[in-house]
Image 1 (cartoon, rainbow over the protein chains, first blue to last red):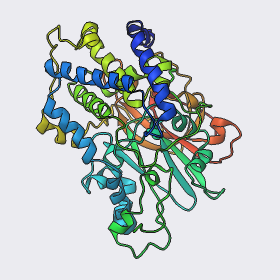
Image 2 (cartoon, chains in turn blue, purple):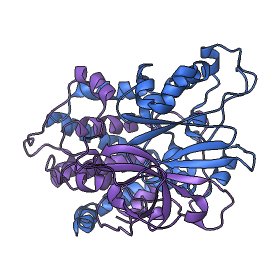
Image 3 (cartoon, chains in turn cyan, blue):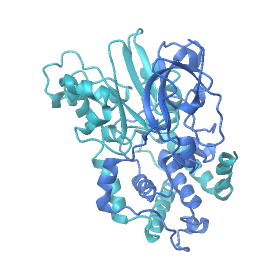
Image 4 (tube, chains in turn blue, yellow):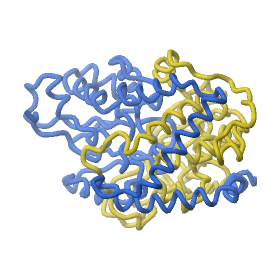
Length: 237
Length: 221
């Protein structure tokens, strides 16, 4: 069983310069990624941009990639998926007990009934927060995330601090997100190690029973469906 | 493989830094990388598990310090090389030297929306009955392949309770090696936090999806 070791070695000698250059650049980016008004190292940034453009041309020239399909793929990810889809699912569950039951029993089918399905959401499991239990989702091994309902994952979700700490110290992680839960509330962290994709069904905020489904959807934040946040308490005007 | 990607439980990675109103992409090349990864994946030259393995086996220092889409770019270039779709020379100056190798398909614009909307389900017909039932206690085997696995190191050897039987799913440990789907039963196992981390400030649990070959019977209650 040397395949793993081979995989590590096979290309790195050839590409040491590449990895070194990219690493140096990213150290810089990491310390600065919060404030984009700071000056960037434009030469290296451009280097990657140029590299990506050149790779794209090569792959199109070779006929592996259709240029129009490439644009369509990107456009699809930018416009068809995102947390507003998930918010609609949550709002429906809050207002329709039958849908809620279906959603918890067969998340994939219930979500598809609202028009959201497909890549990275083929096997959906919706987990319900209750007064006794809080759920939180992570992927410690990579960046698995339910694309059809939440879109592409935010950077922090894919970062080493979240991936390493969510399973070991969820209380501290939640505090960093400004979420303080009663001490007696159990926390259940779901590590997305397989192709099951998890979405949290947050508790409906008290006093919102008279709101319409679309008003309720506006209370549902992305983080409340990952479990690192709670829904807004009232409609933002 | 015990790789740098297997981050669950590691310490000293620092605070989590959510970015307010984070844009979908931080640079325009990132969206092109996303598109290229999806378009090249659609050629059918590698599967999802092979692409994960390609990223996990990047040099650890690079993996830890590179941005997400840079890791995707490096993984993509590695897969293109491994599958002889491009040569090292072509990747050095991006001039086409060799003709394309045959690929299973080249996705067209009109196929994109249906392709993404149907996705690629991984549940398969089971050849045998599930060995474990909901409520049963199981132990995670001391299984340490050098190759790709979705068994995170932090649960190895630990005892948990079967919370869900998720169906029979493609087995990444075989699929990542191009050795076929070899479907196996998939279980969601609940581990008490105290079992995993010793004394802990929370009395909660961690739920991890585990394929049957990762597990063994135990007498633990």
